[in-house]
Amino acid sequence: MTMELAKQTRYLPATIEDLSKFVLVGRERLRSVSATIRAIDTFDLGKEVREQKKEEAQVLAEALLDAETRIGELLRDMPRTKKLMTESHSGLILGTLLPEGITRNQSSQFQKMAAHKDVIEQVKAEARKNDELPTMAAVLEAIKSIE
Image (cartoon, rainbow, N blue to C red; front, top):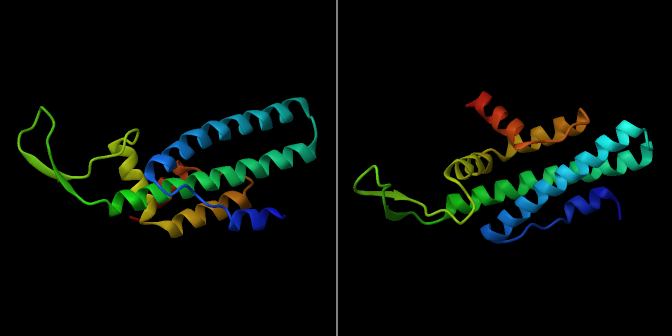
C-alpha cells in the first residue's frame, strides 16, 4: 500500500472526546518521532530510516491538523446553552459547555481552523514542499494574515 493511499483512507475518531484523545496521544507521538529524527541526524544513522521517520512525522502532523479541524467543526455545530457566568460576573450568557480537556482558547483556535480549511491545505502543501512539518501555529498565523 502506498503512502498516498494510506492518507486517503485515514479515518478520524467520530466524537469530540475521542478526537481529543487522538490529538493528545498524537502530539506525544509526534514529539517522539521528531526526537528520533534528531537522533538519526546527530549520529548520521541512515537516510532511508530518516526518510521513513520524516514521512511518518509528516502524515501524523497532517492528521493532527485534520483532527483539530474536526473538533472545531463539532464545537461550532454544538447547540448553544445558557449557563451561569463566572464568579466575577453576574447573569446568564449564551455559550457552549466545552468537553473536558478543551479550553476556551483551544475551542476558538479549532473553530477558526474549521472555518478556513483551504488555509490548512495550503499550509500542508507548503510544509511538504519545504520539507517541514505543518503546525497549528503556522495555520493560525496564515489565517491571521488573511483576516
